[in-house]
Length: 148
Image 1 (cartoon, rainbow, N blue to C red):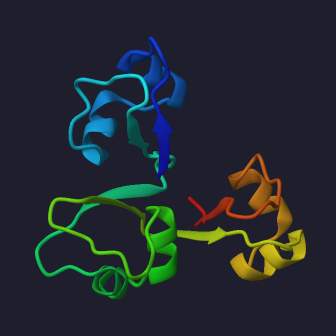
Image 2: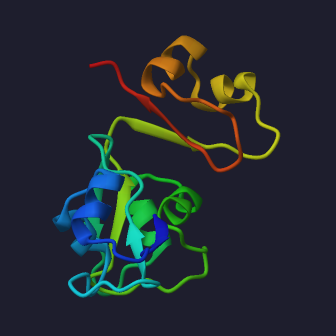
């Protein structure tokens, strides 16, 4: 998720339009979204697509448990949700998780196209099809979809 600072005169409609999210999407990741003022910081879910699901944390959940139960990498879950591995997660907190059949890779400084092909076990043609804007910059999210 990204954190966005509300600009002077901005409305919730301006923000939803700008980030191509719905009011419901914003409500899922923010406690009080109704009274926005200039300077307020809100969470913007940066990934809202057919490739990801929302997951509501329940009592007893940890990042490690969620990752283990869904056969996901705990570092990836943390990074996708703007968390540190040691951060506390709490009941009713909403996380985004990749859907079944979706592999993701978050680029690191110095990555090359060859590194991406190797990490996702895929050709560059498939990666470009699934990720039309590949810049190979640090912290870019890439996905690989199973054949449909």
